[in-house]
Image (cartoon, rainbow, N blue to C red; front, side, top):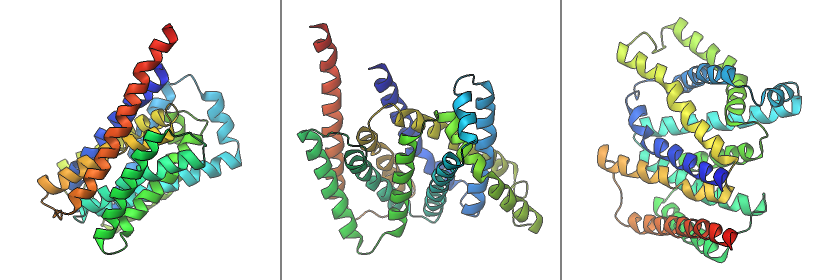
Length: 299
């Protein structure tokens, strides 16, 4: 029960942070999204290396992974999926499409639950299938009401679902795994930043102190939620992780509407009602089940 509770708390904290992060990225809307992603890589890597140096456990597993070409390929792929997700998300937020990015993350839990069932063979109870069905109806209505193929949403959902599955199967802990993922792509990020700085197009040290500070903080803004996510992914079921995911896009949706005044068609509220009902049903069942376990153990 302790690892499960720890994983659930980590996932909830992670999604709360991700739900409010559009406010941070909006402060950097004048900077090229690709440059922001490069800064995310380097500053988060610097923070992760500090954490990694302080760790004593997992060193043998980390060294084994670094010496395995197959493992490095897998970590490189997961790092690429993560980078793609970052880039699409930041570009969507800074171009005024927070609601569309939130739709992408509304799709992720459904994909995660199905991946957990059919790829990882996680069993679902009848009430959990009902929750998945409600979420599927809500998401299908959102896609239908969009009237077009929402490429931003689909790219976010596909890249993050793939990354979630690979983190679930990883033998590395949260810090070593994320550190290696970012390290493998760091040369590309550094090359891009050096080129932009040399050409005079780079933002860092070229605008003002506030922007420089925000860019430096991108390491913590990036690494801390991802560490919480990686910690949770190895301790709770992928299907549970998927349902808790709805916390983040719900907050993003509210931020897009109330803080940045993006338009929400009233008919979409019906779609979100299905999704929120699914979240309430699945979460309520999980809490009820956990509450019963200690009683059975005592009997």
